[in-house]
Image (cartoon, rainbow, N blue to C red):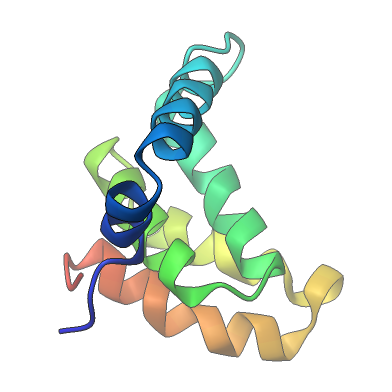
Length: 103
């Protein structure tokens, strides 16, 4: 298994990682969207950025917040007309792996 890039970041840059974690917590606390919706949006953003690892991780978190397989797939495929077919094809397998807990 490949090393976890986030764990490497935390080890190599502990002060920056701590501040980054504070930012993440502040974003999680934003009102207006429930946790599942935030994760589905994160999946769409990571797909637009062509980041399969990010899609995989957020798909797992979305599942843990109650998202269905269909909702996770929809968050990826929503990018078809925005980011193109290549982004969807690159990220869809990662979304399914994340939903199935294959991290």
